[in-house]
Image (cartoon, rainbow over all chains, first blue to last red):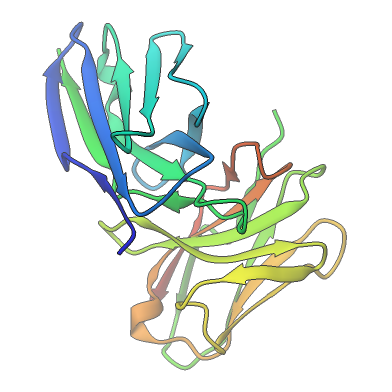
Length: 113
Length: 113
């Protein structure tokens, strides 16, 4: 069956450290993968998009990698801050036959001072 | 920056009643979506809408659900006869084209009693 799994429900790290979140998928061949941030009671907010022919994408303190052989994406936040505390969702576009995004279950990140 | 707006932010209704959730997508976007999120669970795809018709719908989107774009700006989700299990956060989203990110509204919290 098709699955998108984010391996941790919750991740607690100290301010200033690098947070690494994992997204694994099975039985999909996505053209691209996206990461979103969701705060409690709010809609997801887009952060980064990475295409299947890209290995790595960066935006300020954020970095995403995409390994289509391992069927995995890693999402890194460097020099993390308490304001980075939120739930992070990975989402993929399943293929050219559809325009929907499928979301993973999310990882709740808590950055403590 | 343009944003997706949803009204109402919270809707309480009795089982069996009809509800209409409203959304104003970003004006130059062409693809429109409804997602829902049951408390503590993942963001689930309901339906996508393009060129004035449904392009795809999930198993959740049964005959009790319908969508409409009655004019050039609004996009609505109607639930004809609500059930307790319809209680969730409903997110509207829009996208300019299939290779761009989804922009979400902040949702309508639907509570069915």
